[in-house]
Image (tube, rainbow, N blue to C red; front, side, top):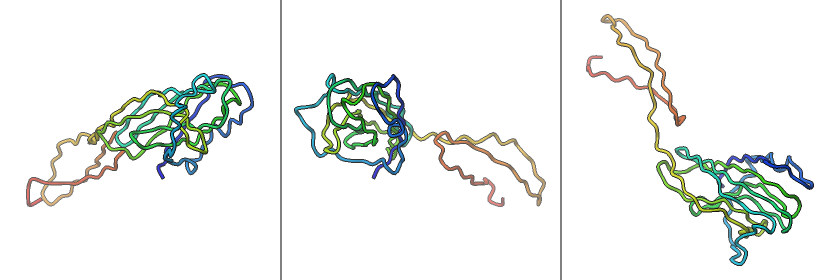
Length: 194
């Protein structure tokens, strides 16, 4: 099971009845990855008949990416769709379900896809998928992103220090890592007697 973090916000006024808590609060244990077993070739878009989805932006990190999309629901259409993301050949479901024909509005969605490989180019798209049958209803444009390279940690400057023979020296070291990797320090001398 691949887990993703989800953020959804409503960006225009919604008409009709909707339970906002179901749209906004998504426990991570409810997020899962599903494969789409069926793609209905005769219905590859529901634009103008209930809703459409636009592939948004990607913000890659070293081993993950934040993807966005915008879904617009219009009058008409029926059934329940979920917002999904496809990265290369893997589908990720957000668990966000929208009922076609129940209300109208525009929604921004954001999902973080983890466990990617650094310095790798991926293709991706956003999609609306009919549930529970997992039939593709609409897709946005296919885009690409490249995950970032590892950034070396940066150690704070260490001043030159002199110490007398048989005396100890204690230094406080600090460093930072923009990738948030764990940092450890190792002391090494170019003098074998030290």
